[in-house]
Image (cartoon, rainbow, N blue to C red):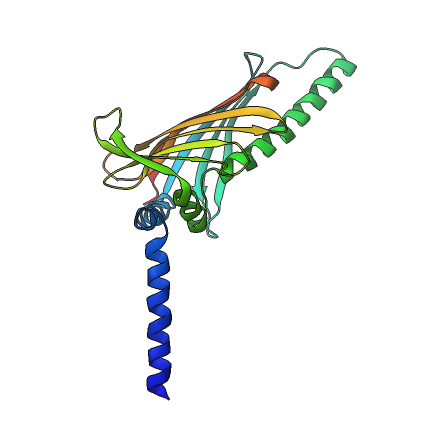
Length: 229
């Protein structure tokens, strides 16, 4: 009986191995997942600063500077250091309208943030699903190092397009470009990543989100990464 169970188990494992081997780019996906897990663990040992600028019709509506650090539960905690908004108009009714518009803008941008977050491929399964259908080419990055460029369509919403470039040695991202839509409006995002000197920590340094139909642009800059110990 034990031999029968053992044989059955071996057969199941063999089938699983064959299936995994047939999944396109599975080895690459495993390397990327492993690299990200190690990097995310290292990230929790750092504190850094993020500046977010919101532009509306070419004018700066808000500049927010926050300090970021991971709390005991593994959730990033944001501490506001500075928040410079555009000057509110004089007059009760005009001020009320401006405050209402500001609230609507913040609600809208929270929806944008939620959508963009899905394109970061936050889970191992999302990475595997993306790479299964993505076209991958090896090219050279701006720094002259080899990168693997993965391009996929309909990643989150029908008809969208996303390209992520990974360092061919570390399997960590170097850049990301997204073209999609939010609430019927075209949306693009591009981001670049860098390694903190002396630590090997990879992080998103700059990101820009554009929604031309709404006259909106958001610039994000992460900097000053300092080890907690």
